[in-house]
Image (tube, one colour):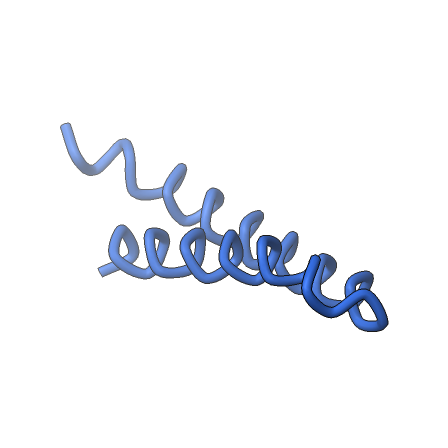
Length: 53
């Protein structure tokens, strides 16, 4: 379950970071949210990896 949440979080964070270029007035806030989602997603992925083996 955490693995799937990790993939979704990283995907959404990447999409938000990519879309931030289209909204220059809100780029800083969007990039901050995207960065937080990416960090959370990669943290979840790191916590799931030991259980996959």
